Image (cartoon, rainbow, N blue to C red; front, top):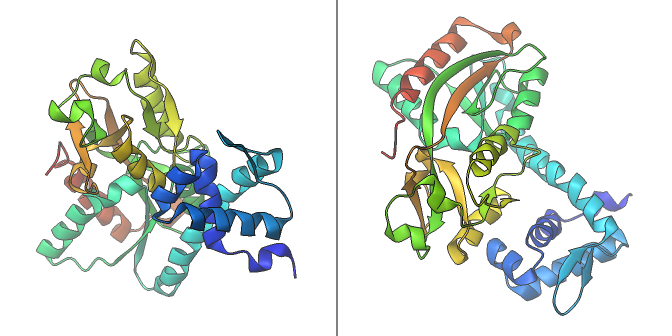
Length: 303
């Protein structure tokens, strides 16, 4: 038996949280655990791996060389594990006329629900199985046949020959904590955002979203600092800090308590795109794409 055969996923999630935050207290808050529980999990993981993952002092927490390597490998592994659970649940649906849709997180807020409502209104017998992906893993899932259709913001076709169709556009806004100085204004201009740190999904998994934020940031003076953070950790950080996070308007009605979405004057606009493998294109799939395009036309701001 190798060490990985009995690794506890809870230990791995605690490790990634501390690696992201470089602080046990903030990591614990993001995981809704006590600091003692997070520290215990890190010690258990280090004992299991027989390596030191963090160099701790009274003032800082830093990754060791081994910890940095483990972080770089383990983030994608946990994301793949989450996707494997979802894929297993959907496996039985394959071959029975069900469309498996892979989507980035933003599509699940309004685009997919609005499309489902249209199908129901028209009595169309469309059965969908949804699996959440990052931009990167969505392309991989289309190429290996895990999903028949991919939907998300800022995704594009690839050199491997995926078909693509722009469905519609949606403006970016700023998500801030309700105590943030900008929250009281009700809206913000791009230059109003330049004084604050910007949180952004990890560049390796959401490269197009990162590029859109980076291009906007570089057009401002001073240039705001971008920090990569996984979605599960971003919201707790926003509620207790003055950071901001650019998110599409669909998120406005799906934020946890303590956060608000602000429209941005002259906002950057992102495109919803559908992707598919041409070898999997069927009349039913074309119908789904047409309905998604109709639904995306309604996405102009918060509902």
